[in-house]
Amino acid sequence: MIELRPFGRLGGADHGWLDAKHHFSFAGYHDPERMHWGNLRVWNDDTIAPHSGFPTHPHRDMEIVTYVREGAITHQDSLGNKGRTAAGDVQVMSAGSGIAHSEYNFESEPTRIFQIWILPTTRGGAPGWGSRPFPKGARSGRFVTLASGFDTDGDALPIRTDARVLGATLMAGETVEYTLGRERKAYLVPATGAVRIDDVRVNARDGAAISDVEILRVTALEDSELVLVDAA
Image 1 (cartoon, rainbow, N blue to C red):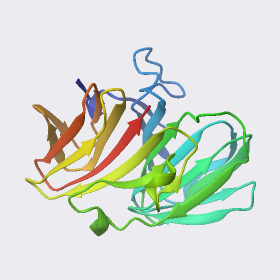
Image 2 (tube, rainbow, N blue to C red):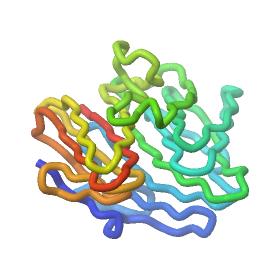
Image 3 (cartoon, rainbow, N blue to C red):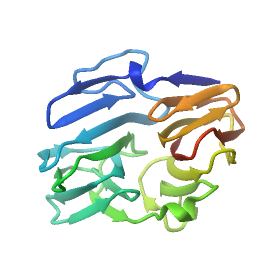
Image 4 (cartoon, helix red, strand yellow):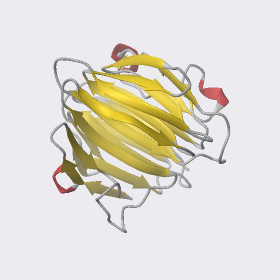
């Protein structure tokens, strides 16, 4: 089953410094049919104006993955971590028993991110943060695991949940496969381009909620950059 969630029909709000679109219920946007997809709870498509951002605020018991599409985001938290994550790269924050952080765009142009929240397998635990580059060339024609709750996923950033976040870049006409399993759910968003899954066209920034699929096959209709969550 594939449910298309067109970008133009997403919830959201424009705060001036932040233009946010919500694939799932979040903040002032509430849709009882879009509370989560498996353990995937939030997928926000955020555009942050230059020299602005999210001031220090707390979280707990959530795995928060930030995929930077354009520009860069600078993170600082109550553990003393500080780092800049640039376009194409990923940062992960395990909120655990509690952490306070800020996220700012100190660049001279807008920063665009996907902010993905996944429910943890267990509550509590020590909070943590990490960031690393994932060159787009290394994802050419295949899905690469960016963040994972599985020890077998090598260099992926660790998250404390039964899920993976993956990225791929496809040239027009290329097809990529991912073994999902019928008991799991997937949520796919093209950061750029357009793809086809079965007979469903998914354009840039649309969401595709996928279930009851053993092997997911995605064909690029245009050069495309994809982000996928494999959720329990």
